[in-house]
Amino acid sequence: VIVPKMKGEMLGIVIVESGWGSMVPTVVLANMYPSGPAARCGQLNIGDQIISINGISLVGLPLSACQNYIKTSKNQTVVKLTVVPCAPVVEVLIKRPDVKYQLGFSVQNGVICSLLRGGIAERGGVRVGHRIIEINNQSVVAVPHEKIVSLLANSVGEIHMKTMPTSIYRLLTGQETPHYQ
Image (cartoon, rainbow, N blue to C red; front, top):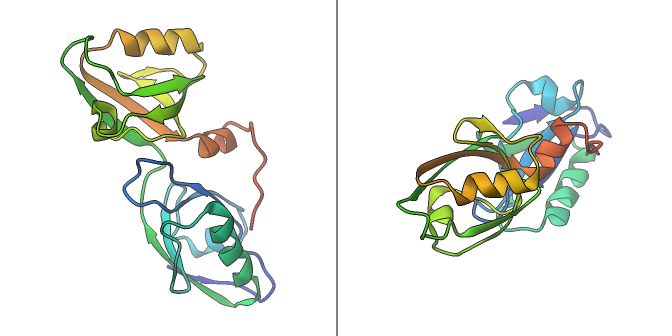
């Protein structure tokens, strides 16, 4: 994606980490300044993974390093981003034949805190740092922690969940103020 902009103009994006367990360890586009260059180009969407900026790979780099690369693009008139289009919501399918099998992750206030390597949750697409927004077509956005744990503990067969990076969730729900770069 080629993003034309004026020299000295910020790109107008907020990025967050993709979360442990994601296919590509890179940053995700979490927000765009409505009149900024990234939004104006019309080719970027919330949830897109940014693989590189101006030919520099962001894969495996810490968030702060990726933010620095974006900041250094401020003095350029064209920024080239390599992106993998991704919806911000991740659909997860955990196959659990019986309650005696561990789900393989822990959750606190709807956020996935830890993940058992090689467990059924990791194989199903669960990612650390993601907020659970739906379990088996039932919204858990404003649901107390105990109810979420109970829903998960008693679910068997195919468990369908929808999750998104917590930082995107917090931006979308107004719990966090975006800091555009």
